[in-house]
Length: 109
Image (tube, rainbow, N blue to C red):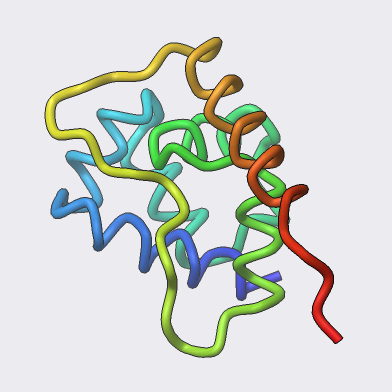
């Protein structure tokens, strides 16, 4: 789905890094990232999509939700922490906390 690639492009733009610098941060070749952004996420390897999402501080589920709900403006889910790199364990803890907070919402309607 091209929508996912559009979401990734917007989120990468919000990091302030150019595509080449972001690819380096994510640990994938620039040409691979460029292909994901141009052709869509569907043809990319799962490992590369995970690397991009981790570098953005989001999960695959976050990406799916943003792609499904995008109305032209992306609301960044991850907090930006200048100069900090998160471990996989820390990102998982953040994801779990986010799910906990969502579970505390009162039903609307």
